[in-house]
Amino acid sequence: MSPKLSRTGSADRSPSDSSVPMVKSEGVHKSFGPVEVLKGIDLEVKSGEVFCLIGPSGSGKSTFLRCINHLEKINAGRLYVDGELVGYRQQGDKLYELRDREVAVKRRDIGMVFQRFNLFPHMTAAENVIEAPVQVRGVNKAQARERAMQLLERVGLADKAQSYPRSSPEASSNGSRSHGRWRWTRS
Image (cartoon, rainbow, N blue to C red; front, side, top):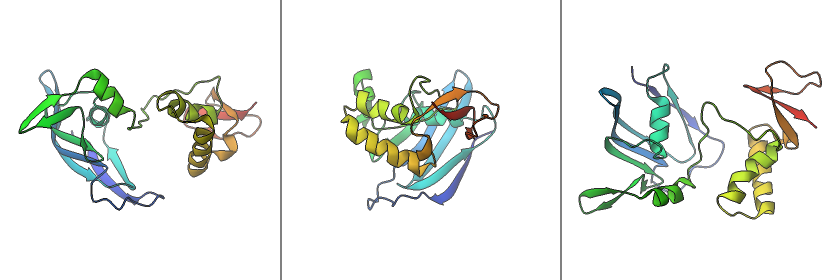
């Protein structure tokens, strides 16, 4: 069974004026041995558009997302992020795979959260959000902190900016909110 593709409208941010899709997939195929997981996926996701991949376990949702970041190599087709070919460069009518170092540089601009995400338990919510921009992209800490607060506000967690994640499914005695597997508590 293939994953179901669903568009749910636009996100809160304004879409880019560009006509270039944020993500574009053309005939993407991915196999693991004899098992074909992705069977010619074609789609376009505009900047600011909310897009859902829905399907049962094993239907290829995570595989497709991993292909978008070139964590999995596709067997056929093409993937673009913000108009740039993912994992390959084209010269004439031939495709050449990028070196690992070149892929890593491009990967810095693609953010992903996996099913089993982990936060640094010794860092606050804000510090967890700041870490990648500062360490990977070299963003000034003050700028990263300001952007982190905007992002936490956007997802309704601004009040938890100075809280630490605690791995516990039970409700907190101090009234902190549960979000999935993580409970945010103020220390």
